[in-house]
Amino acid sequence: MDPRLKSSTQWTPFPEELCQQTEAVLMERFKPEYDIEDGEFVVEGYIYQEEIIGRYGLRFDGQLKQYNFEVSLDYNAEKDKPLELIQASMEVVEHLWTELLEDDLEDSELSKKWQTMPHKKRMYHFRYSTVNTKLEEEADRLLEEYEKKLVYQAPDHDPFKDIPDDENNSTVH
Image 1 (cartoon, rainbow, N blue to C red):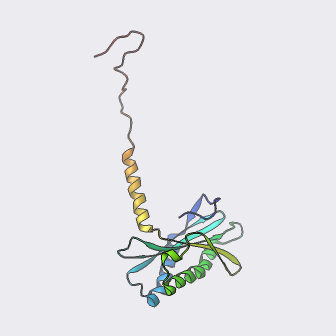
Image 2: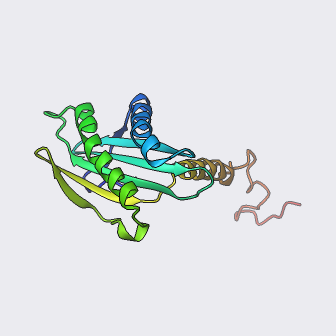
Image 3: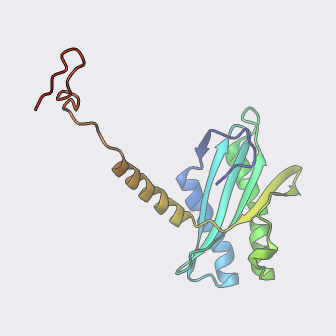
């Protein structure tokens, strides 16, 4: 997940427990009303020095595409409490999901560029994506495994020992 701010380079991931709790809240909120029997919400996020960004996705069994809203907000490590900001952003996340599910919007109608939404004296930025978190994780794992096979160690022997040095012009057989 790419951050919104160019200054966002180092991060701390959302705590796993927070992600699991958020996934459960989204399922509880949307499953009965929108008949999401074969789907699951997937949550991940990062806390940067000046930004908090979360991806709130819905993945269905048998589909490659995962429907996501990425929500970003400015963050000041000296005055803001990240957990409170993440929890407060859930109202925006629920609004976005309600709009998508109720209006039965198509991918082409949703912006993949950052949009801005004011909410409770704070500006939230959001965009839509179709990145499949599970597939991305698996691709990363396979790439790491493949890269390991591309690394070779030099042999322990000296490959130049049988080559004559220029001083005596002798050939070793």
